[in-house]
Image (tube, rainbow, N blue to C red; front, side, top):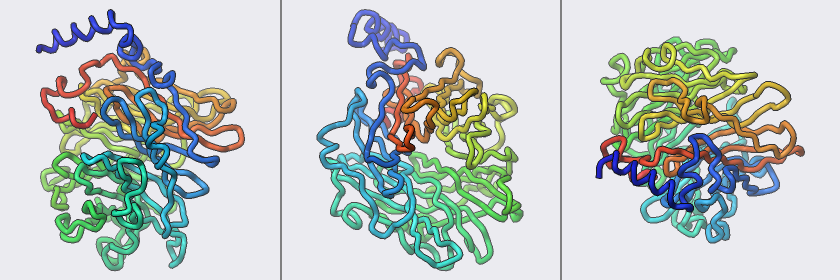
Length: 466
């Protein structure tokens, strides 16, 4: 079937079959009426709940994972295509903690494997001594059965916290991102002191086997650490992308002055064997340092067709300085992306961009938070650009969309994660109420890109992802 004929059939179905006339024919960027009106809120507990990772499943279902503040639990929910909670899953999947952890944490990634088990990768903190780093972050994993219950055959009743399995002398200071591979392996990135050598500050990459132990096939012991430049007094791995071939690309930041929040951005690439890739960057596997102060990388996406890289950028702690940075496939600044490589999305009183992904047609979707003009302090910000980094006017008329949940007047809503579910953009985060209690907040918008996977790329590679 040719693409033109396929589009014609989809158009005919859209115009003649009433059950397809909602989300399928809605203008790009409209709230998806088939997803409980386009906005969904979930209350896991009476505390502050927030979604930090999303994973689309077959048939329009969605995994929603996140963290419950104050009680320090992880939580995972499966939603039906209409945005309601799957009752069979909910009967078993209660929020859960880690016995060894007593500090905050989060889930970075969630995935369903071929056998129906659900994996989550994230971070938990240990609050006991020793000094000088009492808040000790540790990579964490969880595995759930197809029923939603914790898997008793994995770790400590379905949970695993990597306590001390890192090279002697290293001190982990941050665990900032993680990705799960289809076979159960996982990759974590963050920052460490006295790594790779005493006195150094490095970005670390860790790969674990499906059993949750460091993978000796990666850099000999599962760990690799590096710094992009001797001037870096603090080096952080901020976000990670792992290809289907297990090649790891890290977006990082480097501070040359410890007492300020100024930092430069870099990207590094490691082979599947855990070695810095000499074909990337300046021949050492690391790109040139780019000064976009005060912005730091928040997320990274790589085009499956061109290899080009896009970073979601924001100030490290504020709703400020949001934007997208475009790089070539070898890590150089992409002068053809937006304006001299950077799309400035710092709108109204301030924004941040925390998630980014390529659509299969080459367009780019991103999500973050906006402090709009006036009394409103924080709402969801959704954006879509063309492949060249310019805002896509076919998405909500101007390429950006603001969404408020209004649990209380001018309350705080913040987006953390996004996914593409059958071509439709889903964004998840937090919506606060007047008392400060928070619920999981989700929004899904329509997409007229009917042929959302495979056809645009001329490959079947993306079909397994949705």
